[in-house]
Length: 199
Image 1 (cartoon, one colour):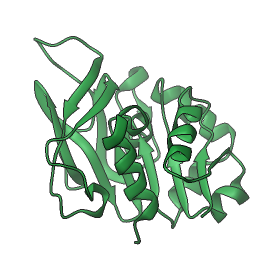
Image 2 (tube, rainbow, N blue to C red):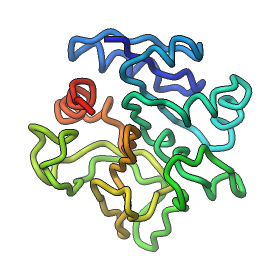
Image 3 (cartoon, rainbow, N blue to C red):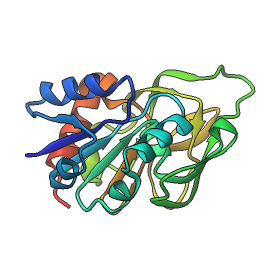
């Protein structure tokens, strides 16, 4: 299977590649458009801020390539947020626009510190193939200050004083707000499910 991790210039690229290798698959980190288009499964990671990642993607001429991908594509953390139309981050950033009428908003909490760092439960419908062999209310590892509110694309939710989208899907595009590569065996199972699912 051809597996590509899109090179967004972020710090977690190698950790995702290592997590994929642990479950028996080989991936390549690249921004080469030909390799991305030939991939059967694609990852769009993100660590940092929306404006910086969008500048990198624009510089590499990847925006339209990503928007038109036909194979399963998984955005991780900021990678999911930039699938939206807009992010409040960096005084407002226009993002890729796959999840229409969705925006990433600052997580507003009065009792909990930001960023939201640590393990948190997610709630989901276990009939979804992405959650195969994952127990309901499993805990995943989060590091973020921005959220996508609940919307028509939401597959799973989490709560940090307010509820937010933990997993989203539109056709072949998936997004997770948490870091499966840092979420132990349950994160490995989710990555395995994504790699082995048929759309």
